[in-house]
Image (cartoon, one colour):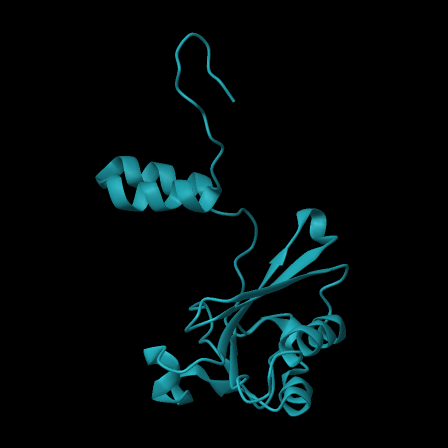
Length: 164
């Protein structure tokens, strides 16, 4: 978008970008006034009231082998789910940690079965000797992680909540 009479370009930014700017650059009273305006309105959640439930039998990221963190050995991927406008579509993305090879696929739904089958098709096509692990966030779409790990013959690790 172009502004009135000058040559500057105006780029829309997300609420998170604005919040990061405020946290970094604003101080004192101005910060106290600006941040609450960005916060979501509504009742705060009670501790432990997560409506989605918990994933069972998770192996946390702390238990990954050292080779995963060092990026010396190929075959360890990181997975994320990007949900589209009005939650009508999704994109599942896997980035292999050493080579930075990206495997992505569009999803019409982001329920657990659809995500699992998509990951099996895409990550399972690779040479089994190279597919070692997958690290994910704790989204409810990963509730079938044990079936995925068994089918593709790999380990599935999970990040700590709120620290993907």
